[in-house]
Length: 163
Image (cartoon, rainbow, N blue to C red; front, side, top):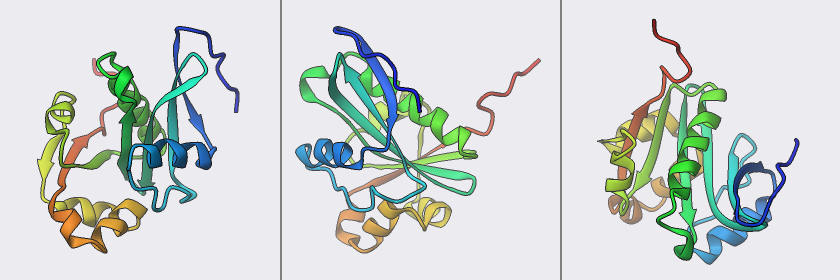
């Protein structure tokens, strides 16, 4: 995989296989790292210059994918980095065959609604992505699952040119 050149003052988002980097970023943000080493998963890291400033994960399963662990460092928020990470994850999910995109979020409803996500019953997400590690994590912890909302976005038309 070709790495993009990281320049001072520039934002670059690239896919990484460096699970320990992802683990370090997420652990520092107190976000669960259970299952991040799952082989089908894809992680994208945002760099500002050479510093990692954000991360997002994609857990694909057949024609659906789960967005997990979107995080941007506090001092870098408000610059559109989360939106760029989400757009990159959406492309990554689509290229892996996903037609539906899901995520759990208990705190960022407004953010995800801006991008077209709609709240759905958690059972719908679980039915679509039962093999994904984050889904298994929440199924084993019903109290934590109860504090999360499930969100859905149809990405079946991504990349389709309408005439």
